[in-house]
Length: 261
Image 1: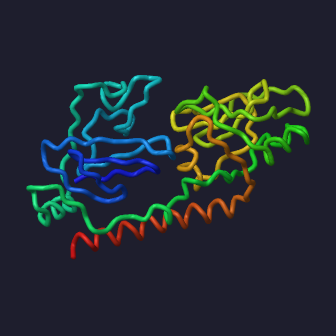
Image 2 (image 1 turned 60 degrees about the vertical axis):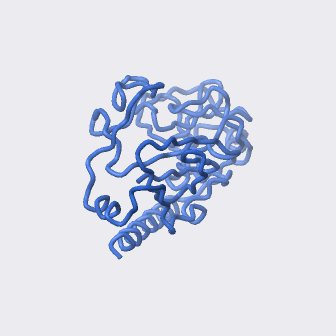
Image 3 (image 1 turned 45 degrees about the vertical axis):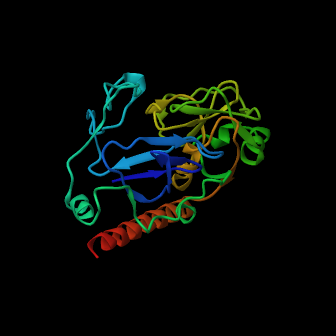
């Protein structure tokens, strides 16, 4: 049983178009094909039991800069074979209800537009610790201007293009904590949004922090995609994130109820 998610992606099994955001039973020997759409940067495929991969620091994911985790710490190559992990009780229950001779798509799924608006281009942020280091013109450019994802972008960070964010005076910051979603300003005045493979400390001043609710939206932006920033408060950011987690929890309970019905 597999599930494919992600905005704007299409996939098929032996030429048969299949729906995303649904669980699908695929028999052994079936060839899966994926086609990128007009929106979104990547798709996600999940299998029952999860992927059986090398574990490093408690994670099965791959971290390319240090070449650890996943499949020998590298990108997948033609001929690689991936296995799924052991099946839990829920997965066994699924299999007991399926015909194992043909592709079988569940009737229900997730209407992802209610879960995440991937078309959103106004990204909500919290003001950064060093926000007041920047002059009025620099803050005006950052908080009201339009930026695009530059071609010097990867999983470590997105380099934004569209305007120079200037300091009140030359200052240096002792390396301090950063994480995914931190927006730093380089010495040249260019904003960088730190992404999933970012470092844990940095020396560039932090003008903003992407609200957790919009991190999935940022992760799906392509080079050239445009965005703007909108400042919100910590209480609103927490409320949005907690409501999102509550929605996910409700979906999980509903799906487990469907399996056991």
